[in-house]
Image 1: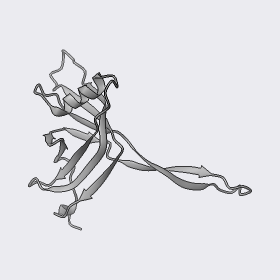
Image 2: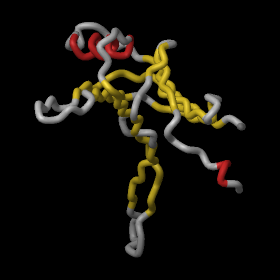
Image 3: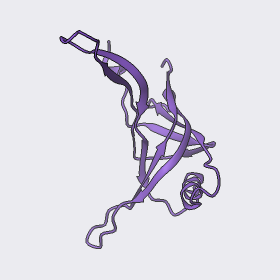
Image 4: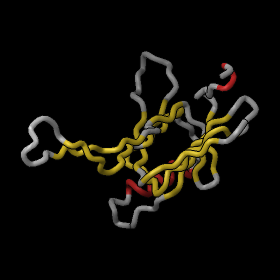
Length: 149
C-alpha cells in the first residue's frame, strides 16, 4: 500500500438541504454495537455476550460564527426555540471527505437528523480569538460510502 492511498481528514464539506457549509471540525462519526451479558443456568465459568442494538454519538459541528443568514442556523432556531409546539423537522445531513482536487472519496449520510444543542464559545475581552459556534445533531442512523479515487 502506497502512502498516497491513505486518506487525510482535513478537506471535507457538509451539505444540508442543498446548502454547503464550511466547518472547522466534525466529530461523532462513530457507531457501537451494544452487548448484553447473559448468564446461563448452572454455568458459573462465563457469561454469554450477546449483541443488542447499535448506538451512535451525536454529530458535533464546529465553525467560526458567521454574521450572514444560514439555513442550518435557522433550522436550529426553529427546532429549539418553538418548545416542541411544532413537530421537529428532520433532515438528511451529509459529510463528504474530499481529495486535493475536490473529488468525493467518502460520504457519510446522517438520516433523520435534528439539532439538540447550539452553543457559542466564551466571550473574552483579553483575547482576540475568532468566535466559534458548535451545533450538535441527533440522528437515527448513518451510512458510509467509499468512492474509488
